[in-house]
Length: 412
Ligand code: GAL
Image (cartoon, rainbow, N blue to C red):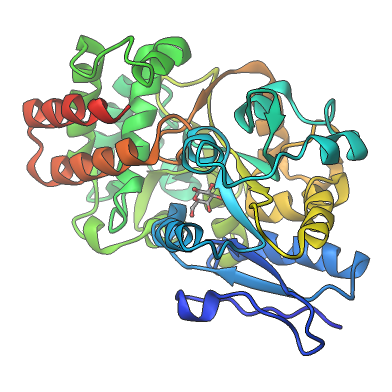
């Protein structure tokens, strides 16, 4: 039986069911649809299909960056006891507070034992997918969230160096604006992209340890450093494209790729987009550096997949997870996705310079979980932060923004 691939964009078509032989299809639920998102997934499914040609796979992806739509569809299916066979979920709070705490996931300790994974994934990642000694999902990758991408030609033609600090950022942005070039591309039609800029400022201002204290309540959201971060954020907003609210992250990255804007701040799935969709080359057409003042810090985003309770084809799901967690699976997926492998034994030759640099950086940086991508704090809090950020981008009222964050922190 050949692989059955049907990318779905709505709930009706994303339901599971049997194939023509009455076997339960392996329904893989994610938000990786096209435009830089899908390539890695399809490569992984190819590896799976080669190993298990008799298991029919349904690619049930729901479009929308950062799971904007997929997470809502997933929540209603989980509530209705109709889980997909397996689904994309970020390690950390998103997995643990949404699904593990609700008793919706099977522990995977036996699979980790069987596959010898306990020393193949960094302990930090295993911790992000564990609760009370049980491991609940398998990380397929590590994305970095604090990356500044820039158009090399624009920087060269204007004799500019990519900024490493906020002071340099504003100098460069002024120089670009004086030449009529949009300094910073933003596409916040889905507000998480703006939240991602803000969390990177928070990380830069607070450092990894204190940034972590925001989510435990040890540092309140009206702390002077948070206020300072909001001020920096506000200042940055003076340099974005006017049509930011009608663009998504791909459309914003496209401005940089096409030379209509100089920089954007985005996770390294943007690299997958630049390379696979715009046919651009790393270090030729576009360059990268850590976002201002965040060298030595690494905003971690890890996509993982687990085994929901109650699925009928649990053994097939485990087979899929074993491929997703294998060196072969990860080295097929990640070079296309833009991420680095979650495993520590990747085949370096499969990765471009960006991938190689990022693997080094991951080993040598202080790690911080992303809020915008669900790892740092529960979904309810993130939803409220996204709303507050969205209002802030338009109104730019720092006091009101800080008040909203303080109020939202009751949900932590
Ligand atoms: C993140 C996810 C990435 C990428 C990105 C943009 O939440 O971890 O894999 O898909 O969203 O959609």
